[in-house]
Image (cartoon, helix red, strand yellow):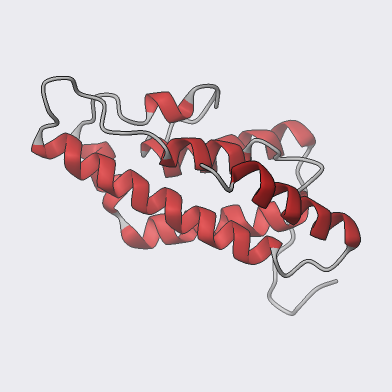
Length: 150
């Protein structure tokens, strides 16, 4: 049922998993062709073109990606989408990846990615914190214990 004007979308599990990986990919890399999410944190500081930088720095797009990720996380955590919070936290612990010193473009990309990840993480944690079931409270506590030192 739902609210008037609200659209409901029914997807199979494979499509849902693909949407989840696309959201993480856009947050961490700014690349729209989504796919495998393994080592996304490592790929996030690879060479960027102007198109990726525009996507990463597009504040309304990234805000919507963060909000959509948080909404999906509210429904899927803790049973599905378990890789979301560890992936976001691990990407925050990265440093700029150039040995001879980061260029201006790399610095911009790195700062924009960190901002996007922080925005997404804040939105996800805010959504998850509104859940009241015992299993959800235990999950929140486990997140805090697992990632407090990072």
